[in-house]
Amino acid sequence: MPRRRTRKLTRTVSPAVQRGVRAVLRNSTAFKQLTPVRQRKLVKDLAAVAAFAELVHSVDFPAFVTGLIAGVFQAILGSSMRQMEAYGDLVAAVASSVDRFVHDTQTDGDARFYLIENFPTLFERCADGTIALVGECPKLGATRRARAKLSR
Image (cartoon, rainbow, N blue to C red):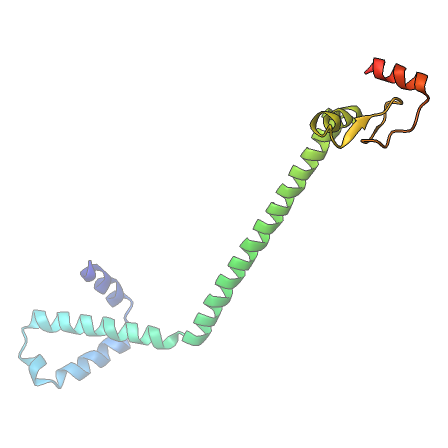
């Protein structure tokens, strides 16, 4: 695999870089002692390294990193905003559904019945049909109280 990458980089090496590498290597006695095949490989490899160095120097690294960080931050911020909006929509839909459910399925009579059945020590049904705290029902005459007890 590294060989494939080297070949790809070598194709992008400018002729000026290749000439510069050859000029430096021709003055080397160690390079002159290599076989022609090894010399060509060494020239290609060094040219690829030089091309990479040229690329690194051509990139404004501080600007690149600043742009990268800003882009990532904006992406995270945008994603968080969309998530919060979606969550708000979800909460609104749930609240609306609960209100609609209560409105459609529960009546005031159901609520009164629930209070009397579940909290008999706190609430009682008065003779006039209203609900009141225990002992807070309006006072009725003796006849009306007797009729109210019978109607329960």
